[in-house]
Image (cartoon, rainbow, N blue to C red; front, side, top):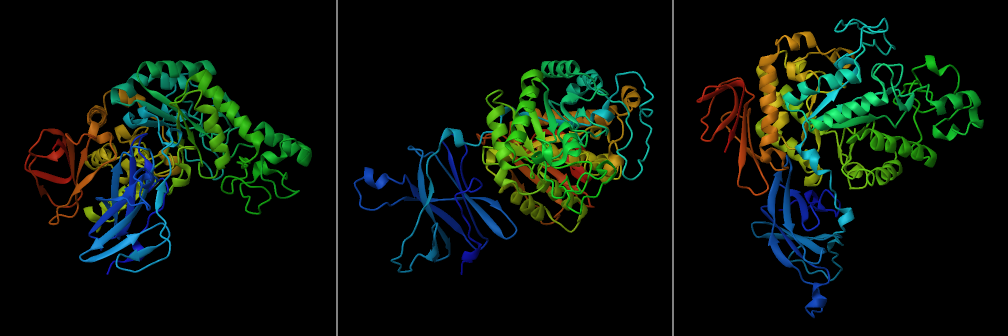
Length: 588
């Protein structure tokens, strides 16, 4: 008997959406016991046109789109001629048939005189179509923490010797090494050679910390990094090489030297900025600069960090302030994107208004949210264009760390990530295998170059847009937090020490650029039951006439494998066997 409790459909953007102005996509989730799903659909007013008393749609088979651990995802694509769609579903298993309506699920043979409400896609308004900037799907990102990337300026007594590691004391922000914007500009040819065409900067604005997530002035580039003219020149030169620039916007909270917070500390409730924050006690202004713990709730902060008071992004004045700030970044510096730190805590009102302000200035501006879980409420077309894909990051890490997981388990986990969003969002999800908030991937791999390249091959061939953390291309190591933010060893890089691994990573990145199937949202898995740790998948382009295949040996034994098409990249593959940690990418 069909498990009807496993059946789910809602007319939300993950299950019923416009892929473009002409194409509607409808998804239905069922249990794995369903053998076939059908959609019965047509224009909601078609019976009027046909002079019929009642609406009656046409029955079409749905395609099995994705397999999850306990569910199946069925899909139907159509081009409604009148831009509207009314529908319900039929699911079958053998002779058993059930009908799925908006208000009920009933057996097909059941005599039922009560109402049956159909689902609807009322109208495919062009302005409601979720449309991330087209350039993003073609981008390979590179995350830079400016203080640690490259120092073009002269040594200064304020800075630690470049590359010398000093573990900070608890509660201290850490040392400055003096990396600057001119240093990034100097190294743009290096990034261009690597194949990078998008840079994501961690914060660059005035602060007393090297990471600058406690911002003091959102309009002033930190002088240790350079000037506004340095920023403009960096963007100009990056654009001349085809490299886009995305800045980190810390709008959830500020630093204690932010002008509004300082005014509140001085004037209390008499400050015109008092309601720019969440202050819950008259004793909030006892020396907060020395306190990290705000668990007493006297005012809200990022986490419980007293040095990062939380901004009230519901306040119209706060919204207007940041609309003005970000407009300046876009108009004057010509940036291409903004990444929103702690993007799930910022109000939806703030995000919608900021989008309405910025998109007319630069329609192709990319708005990326830092959210670590299912982010559908922020991805309906009026807030973020994409989010950081932490669910996929966890999927990759789980498969790596838990050796009992099979390729089928990996498929189920990845498909659960893909089923969260419309396909056009999946294509631009911000994928990564390490960031400033995680252990470096080379550390995860124990310094094993073959394993590192296998992980990079996954990053660059799975659906979504990939981002490399600075130094990953040379296997820079480091555990979480302080130790994963070491300086780029430019003397060693320039001497050619890392030329071999740089070349391999560059080849993978250029394959990503050149192979259109790698930029789509589709993926098809091929399982090898005799060796369940073989990860083998196909990527297709929209026309389905070209396929790229990826085969990764994540097991402990050599895997006999013969490639019939052209090999595009290989590691630990002799033409007959893929060794453990080996990789083959080929035309299928």
